[in-house]
Amino acid sequence: MLRALAFAFATFVASTTAALACPDFNLAPQASYQASGKQLYATQGFDVVAGGSNYIWNCRNVQPGTDTGAGYFPSAPDFSFQLSDMSRYKLEVRVISECDAALLINTASANWYYDDDDNGNLDPKIVLTRPANGRIDIWIGTYDGEFCNAQLQLETFDR
Image (cartoon, rainbow, N blue to C red):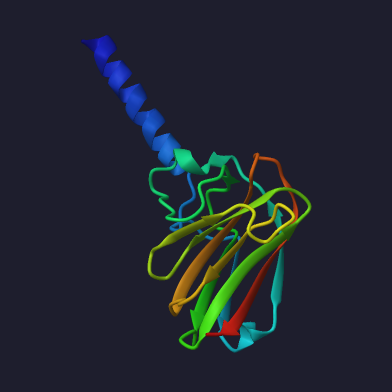
């Protein structure tokens, strides 16, 4: 009985630890910004170190309906943006990196998006065709769990 109880407790701790080690938009981001659709009409770049230790497909709380490639991400978002005046724009979120980067987004409407290589040269890009006003959280990871220098770029275009 005591052994079964100890096993159950250890299993519970392991499962909650794994859940805590996943990308979580409730954690404080590394950097926060405010931007309007008009301000992002010219490309805005943000330097970051890409990479993380959380394998995306082990995270039940993250269910992107896009790409299915591998990716390792940090727990806390690298960036959080409070977006406004987005109704007439589409938003392109892309990464330029020194390695095989990956991109994970949680939008203001609570949708997850993931991409690995759509920007070419093993870099990711996600285009939100109808971005909502509000908070968007962004994680910059890597395909293989390595770390490298990268730049997040945001740019809006007329719809």
